[in-house]
Amino acid sequence: MTKYPPGKRKATKIPISSRSNAKENPSSLLLRILLKGSPYYVSGSLIAEKLNMSRVGVWARIAKLRKAGLTIKASQNRGYRLAAEPDIFNQHLMEAWLHEIKIKCKIFVLENVDSTNSEAERHLTDQEKAPFAVISNEQYSGRGRLGRIWYSPTSGNINLTIAFRPKIRLIKLKTFTLWQGITIVEFLRKMTGNNSISIKWPNDIVLNGKKIAGMLTEASIDSEHVRSMVSGIGINVNSTTTKFPKSITKLSTSLNEITGNTFRIHELTAEIIKCIILSYKECIKGISNETLFERWKTVDALYGKKINIKTGKDKFSGQAVGIDENGAIKVKSKNGKITHVNSGELSVEKW
Image 1 (tube, one colour):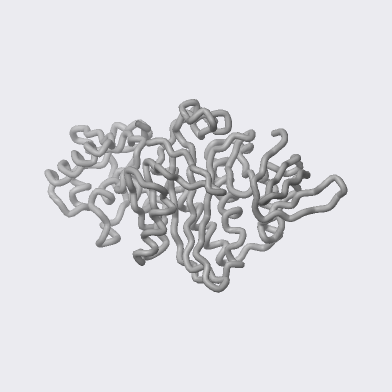
Image 2 (cartoon, helix red, strand yellow):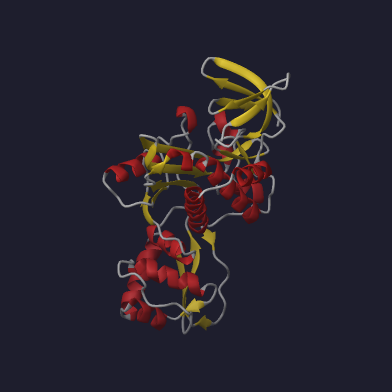
């Protein structure tokens, strides 16, 4: 369980409007009211008024949310407050947090799935309106770059995919994964206070060479136009990586291990969704090469390091010296020649 701020001893009248969307689930609205009122208690009569139901109806709905794992405390003459959340995702709490940070995005919350990217692709095939997000507590075939499997423990971490229907030229989104990574790293630095969190080109978020998160963007392209796109990210949040498979234990870390803190995964996931959607909108609008290069250099984990790259049957080494306008990594050889690499398996000689 992850706690919310301690409750204040008095109730509050919160400035929240009535249901703004006729389709909003009453449980999501109830949780939104409690979030808005936190850390104060919110009176049952005020909740009943906003939900347009009886006090008994409010109590029954709160009982159902408690059964789903949320800790909602009650106090006589003061009302209710959200005290803690579980390390598994709750559809209604996710909807409440997205509303709280003013992001419109339909979400699908699952207990388990083969891959959130695969599930998002299935929804796209079924003509689901985009953007939308798929979140799962567990993946049993999580997809990583170069066909690798992304390890996805049962709870406490983020397994997330957002789907888009850009219907624009591919060139507009050629650096999307890098730009998204920049935005997320800047957010994680601010949230944790650790400015050493960085990106290992092209899609790993790391600290001192240990992986915190991995991103995977996949697109359906038709005549140089992106018809649909899914952007997946897995983030180690509250997990203890010593319990990971031995093959990746020494290569991984989590936000909990970095800071010593336990994070509210619903709030954090909502903020990551916000980062990804804003990154997408910025790419569509257009990002200058100068801005890309400047922002990338501040989060580049490889700049100046000697790296080894395998592309197909070819292998070579050199010094990483940033990226180009297409998002390719630039590698400087001993003779000063710079090679631009669009894809490949990369390793660092020494962190």
